[in-house]
Image 1 (cartoon, helix red, strand yellow):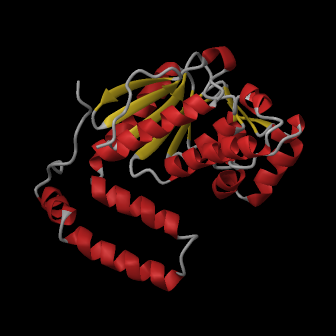
Image 2 (spheres, helix red, strand yellow):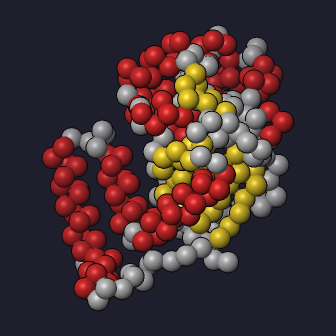
Image 3 (tube, one colour):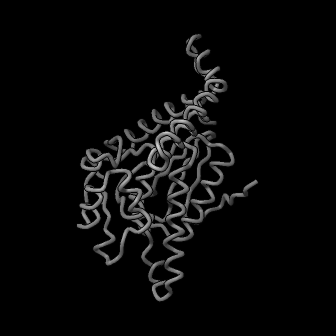
Length: 267
């Protein structure tokens, strides 16, 4: 069993099973991610998988989501190439893990969503942004590159839009982010965002947990497997679903009742 330390220095974690809410909590640097935060996020995601949480909510403290990677970490390692490679790749591993997490990942975006923070937003299954949120890939204006996040941004908004953002260090607003598909929904304020989050959680918890997990994995495989192999695997997964959760799902539909997996977070 994985052991998780509940006393974090960079995160605040709230558990209301089957929903786990994580707040990036380094407000003095607009929640920039250092190695400690990356390590703690990996611990949390291991807990999500082990305990089979169905929804993971990510947000930031004090009005910002995340301003990217912590420049201080980079400067401390600037004369050590191997340390810089490890630092950068460790962040990429965290993004990879978040991207394929079986749970539904919801990002609540406000204030600054920059660099690595934008990369984290791009792996979310649902992204809700306040209308005042600002997004950017500022790395090239600092003389560095968006090494680990670029592939995930391309997957989210496409190559052309990513090139424009990355090569100009462009800052965009929430309406532009919505238009290009970086975010899915806009909220006017904290109250509106909370209401939209609650509705999102309710919808996610109406879906069968294993069906959601298998569907998410299937969607990730679209770009990585030959079509015939993909569809062969999907047919096998479909047959398993019909004979497991599909039994309860069809009964619930016919009997006009919620399926047994439809739950609300624990109080």
